[in-house]
Length: 524
Image (cartoon, rainbow, N blue to C red; front, side):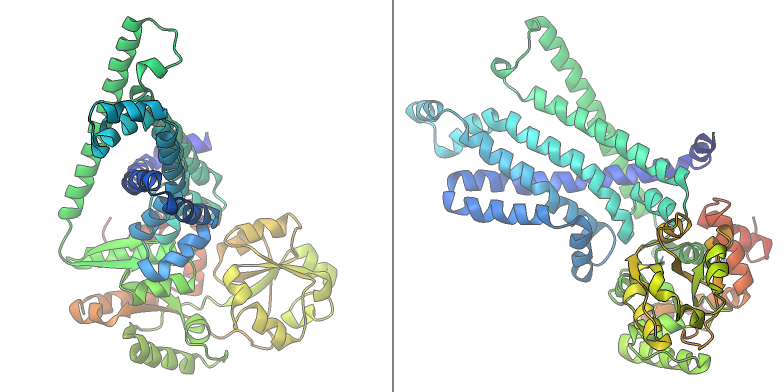
């Protein structure tokens, strides 16, 4: 019942993301066909290119999808482009190979007969080889299309949307209903795509090659029905793409894009500030949430894929600018503000009202067993404990490497786990210690004990809006709006907002808007 209620409540969002997923998949598969079939034909005629082209396609297929996506981000930025490129690359191999196989498998006597009646090479290709090879080619397209539906869920990881948004958001907030709301439509979509391409495969198969005992009249009737289904689907798809295009054309000329990292607090902030800016100005705000860690999001800002996001002073100081951690709040903020402006032409606005610093957390029974109250207390027991942290914390100077060096201990084992997965691992006794943010509602949800940073290793992590300087110059009216709201967001406020999403299973945009209404920033 909870799942059904979630579907009913969020049906508009699920439908919108499904249509977005379909659009991205169609674009990717369409491009793969336009590239793959000509390549398959080429290697059928130019044998020397056979091994190099198939070899490259095989290598691409062997690269993990996340690695390929991560590699594409510095060159292609975030959003639709890298997602489509990734899926196109993964879809090429079956199409190229099946096109080549289909053409090569044609009986040589048929080719000789075609030459004998005076057909040119181009006519043989278009009138004989491609029609006879089409069933095999479509089998490759079918594999690629179904695979593309699943792969396209990765698009949400870099802000391209689609059903993956629900899956990733659900994983990070331990919301099984949200995970299922993304996974089930994706599954049905894959089955539907398989059915549609199967119809096309059947239609292009010559009657003489079909293994079908049906009467001729029945086969004709079936083919008519299949054509009606395909035509109806094509019309619906065209209408969907036209509506999407018209919607894009109707957008205001004054547009800014707010991005976020891939955890609850960031998504709440992005939606909250986007709502307020749209309420107070005539600027349209696009939201690119759940982009990933610091490096991905900062790269999106410097490349112009987004215009604004919310960073933390300690992260900017230590991870981005590579300074050794210090605890002087004013010095950290001053350095970040000056260096971001000088090095990246990015404006750092007024420091916000909450400090989302790193903490280490353990279960209550672990704290009691080892008498843990501070991080220093781990010195004598860390060699018996396994720590599970985010990949970012695992590799940052102001994260685990710097922490263990500063305090002088090493854990028995370290495990990289992103999002809510590290909390689940802790509760299931697969790890003993986790990293967390001080405003993280999952600390409250799982009743964890946070260890005091008694030697003050962690620098201050006050939230700061970072904006491309040209945006501030073009839309100076957004600065006081952002700074006024930022001053109202305290540690207690953010813990409560995060709790509403992570524990009460409310949507981040709903939580953010509710806060704005309740505090008089906007009218309901």
